[in-house]
Length: 521
Image 1 (tube, one colour):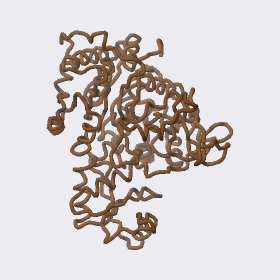
Image 2 (image 1 turned 180 degrees about the horizontal axis):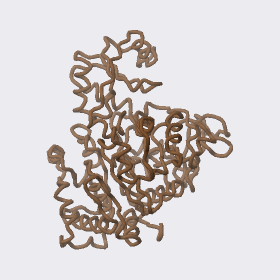
Image 3 (image 1 turned 90 degrees about the vertical axis):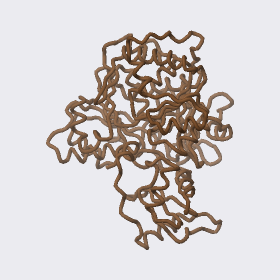
Image 4 (image 1 turned 120 degrees about the vertical axis):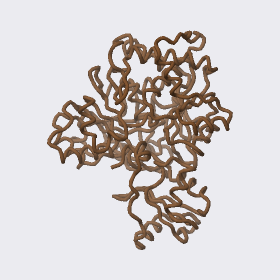
């Protein structure tokens, strides 16, 4: 950072000062230079201020429009307010939960249904299209934001809702200071360049996608916002037409790319870097990518929303250390503890604990959970007890083994079995439900005791949870097997389903589902 930004929107302002005419964002329909993006966010900040948004207020944004999200998040930063970006599928019960939990001043969306939900919760609603028309109109005459609105570096700037061990998502609170440190440390490892074109097929409601906006501004790169359609069969053409040099991916995208490359005589000629997080990337996929694209470098990463990124491998470091997810970010540390909290020596498996300026501020309105997951080391520095287990070698490289709780990852996204089960049991006619996390080649599976069909259960769950969180496979049983404590015996459940050969064929992903799922293959 040339002047070391102190506030999130200063990343953009510095990029605009350096290269005002360089393209900041592009999509298949629009593009904005850094100068245009800075001006649009300033006008939007003034418009939001006129609508009553002030320092500390929350604003919820639910849309698939990545350019609109970027304009809004920088505008909200200028006001000292706090934004929360939701996927466009978040509606009904899940949206109501976020509105109750975050108590926002404004909800911005192009979805009329979201407007009606906002009205029912006494939340002011603004249409995204009208807001952006005014923001992008260079002739719009609006006053600048008053100076007293300027936030402090320790002020919250975003709430990122994430699944957890409760039935409803919780929000991770991120301050300007924490976000900027994380972005700077990640950039030190990935080294995006000002001539890069970062092709982002991920929704900006996913923090991996969202941070591409920040990394592009820090490096001066162009961020190209892909669509669901572009990441299907047209992926190779989409990458080539965009001139992509960097691809932030989850395994489903990388698998798709490798599959297409095996059946093609050529590939994206400029692609130089692929990053991966969300779940482990298979050796077969990495080998196929390297064989087809000899100049491509791969960087494996591991992280959590609570600290953004935990570890990053050097480029192609997996070739020397198979199975490792990397070294801790510069300026941070990771160590391993046993169940009593005692540090473990290299090579022994225990819980990962993360310490550093990238550890976020905690959970919104969850003081007990914050105290449990974010204890303070010797009364000074916050730590993050990740709930992830693994080992660390003598040189500090991390090797992930698994999770302690009910969180699981599928198609690159972290999901909660408790949240999915709670949504299923809210369906009329369902008496009990259990989720089997992915294992081997089998994806997540939902088992229910219900008076309606499995397909009817899955369809009705859309009223209670985002569609991409609903397992593609559901089986109806007369009863769920339990252990001596009365809890569902998942091992016995898996064996029961396997023996009965009751698992139906996978339900094909619909376009709306694939959007957040990263583009299921």
